[in-house]
Length: 414
Image 1 (cartoon, rainbow, N blue to C red):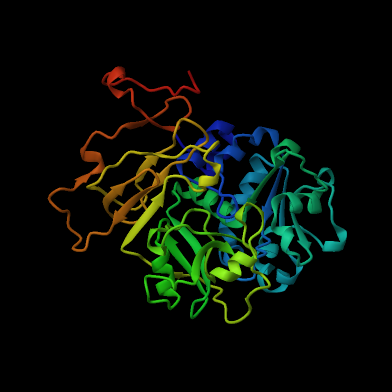
Image 2 (image 1 turned 180 degrees about the vertical axis):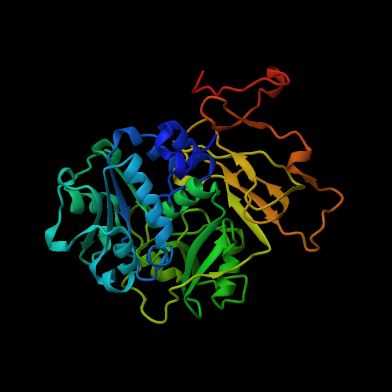
């Protein structure tokens, strides 16, 4: 069971959320929370805030998507406005308007508000609004942006409690691909910067090792220097990566990896481990503003996008084992049933070489042929199914109890 843009108006909210869940969509930046958890409350909201701020000085993902994939985003926004929402606010910085926003403004024909005209009154608006802000870093934060744009103050609440869904542009791009094309999340846009010969803007499979990213940025050594560390995130909001770069796999929320000096990180670490080196390095220079595809030989796909949410977000449940041959887009893990959770999909063609507590490793077959020990996922009993009521993919440990031909109904629909 899945929803597409053509039948969006006939779909129930659980179907829409399930489609996003089955596609494995998570926030493509920031916290990386499973996206379907927001859209499960679509009946309670009227407004969508598209966070197009991209405050980090080395980020061009959302700006590039808005400029070059305008038609896709416009199709999604038009469908949402026709069937489910009253207002979509696209919020960018005024400093980016001239270079990056012309295509979206022309395609969507929305009302434009300058920083001096904010906040707006959502009750007086409809359709698409472009809300431009001053160039302030903190305006990229969801709670700050919502207060600035719509005068909504969050106090231990979620935007949905006030009638809003907030998503960044790359997440909306993934939602379009799920609803319009039935595609799953297997690719990620990511920057590489810091102590590397050149800044890179790359498109890579989910799970790409940091060593591949660093090599693309001119760092040929697989190891960092003793006085260096790897960070996941942008200059103003990143976190040290535990373990060597070879063990770090790009997650669905990874927008950037940085190589930083350990002493600089120690001097600029804030609460909860956040590192802010905005003023510690010179982030200007020759930036790539269009992505280059990079194809690694191996990927390590995380079973949870952000382990910090381990108390409320459940890890995905692997449905493959070592030796299983998979193709890009094939489901390799279904949502866990112990909390909010997502599906995971193979991001390259190859053979599963490891299934651990934290990730699934897939390696490309060098010859393009199957080895003697490999089995295709559909050639063995795979312990998952879908609920006939809501369409959610479910790990099914009780397979033997149901018997052949039994239609499954998940615990939420029983």
